Length: 114
Length: 112
Image 1: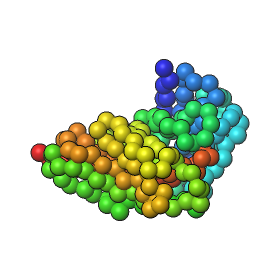
Image 2: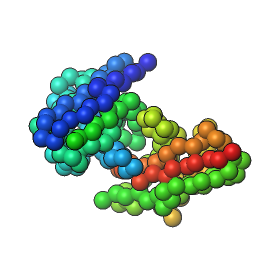
Image 3: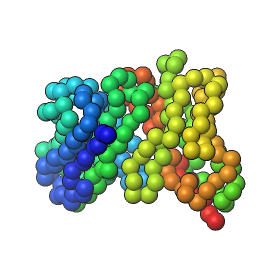
Image 4: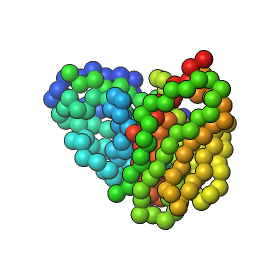
């Protein structure tokens, strides 16, 4: 069975500080990987997607970056946090192919920027 | 670009009454995939149902929806609401690539 693990569960960070969030998928080779952001009371906004190691596509510009250093790992980061980065970050995976496939979400990381 | 509209931010109804959550979309693609995701409190979203076939009813866990391309709609329905249905419901649209566009979500609150 496939499992998706996100870390950390929650972060409280200062404005201007760096951030790194991680996601690992086990039990599925070469999954499509996604980062989503959910502001408090807001919709799910797709940030990045990756269909293969080393390749990441940006969907929106929010002063964030993403990398896929391994087939089963997806990293979201920034060098300088903004207040507007606060929210709930979700990693997700889907089977190889188009996003017409089901998205399976991780348990998320709640980020508070002060 | 693609967009999904969910007109109700909050729907409150009594247990046992029917549920209908609205979803309309805009896209240039002639064969879009439409999804409903449900997110219970303190949980992550999970797929409820999906469809890409015009005028075909899709059902799962008592919920159903029919994609109507003529009206660009994919409304979610259930004949009888249960307390456990209280959650946030997102309609979403796929461009058949790797982008999934979500609506703003509808919070469903079912009272006893």
